[in-house]
Amino acid sequence: MRWRLAFLGALLIPDLALDPFRGGLAATLWHPLGTDDLGRDALLRLALAAARSLGFASACALLALAVGLLLAWRGPRYQGAWAALRSLPPLLFLLPLAAAVGGLSALPLGLLLGLLAAPHLEPALRTRLDWFRQSPAWAAERTLGATWPSTLRRWAPWGWQQAAALFPSAWLSALWGEATLSALGLGPGPGHDSLGRLLAEELPRLASDPSPLGWAALAVVLTLAWTAAPGAAKDGNQV
Image (cartoon, rainbow, N blue to C red; front, side, top):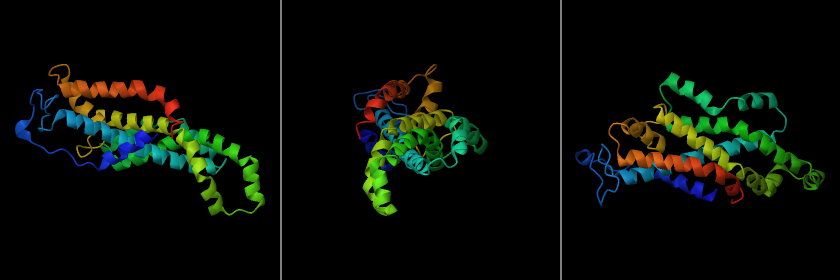
């Protein structure tokens, strides 16, 4: 979890400087992947886009866990509504919405991804919290008349530790949600560079005019897809 949270800082990194007169340069020693059409070093752009995508996914996952904990803490209320939301994969909701409004910018997309992922996390979180509610420690809190602020202060770290085990799955869902919408041209605009935007620009060119940046972006995405899921269970314990 920690290494994913480290990428939140990438959301604050400024964009690379543009130099259109040096656009489209071939790979050299100084530019191992060449430059893109706007003169940005392709390797630096790939690194920045990947870091921003990972940071964006981390922010969405944190929101999803916070909302999921809130839903689980409320107990069995509105379970029918949460079950209905869980039956709808987030992308099935986001794709028609983004197409209807002509695309979603980074902030609305992040909020929607986090809120849509939260109901999927709620059952696992509720199971963990129900175990705590049925424990002697919880009964002692109630018997001794502990106030809500004191209970929250004492048990919040434990609750967050339980939620953190689900962070990788929420992170992966947000990462591919943003990448899919961006690759389809329905995600954040040019002001939010990401792996999805790189794929949207480079994939159509791979068949006719392949660039090192396109192949490198595709390799990074496939590597993430291959490594993220198998490592999720192990990473969940490395809070």
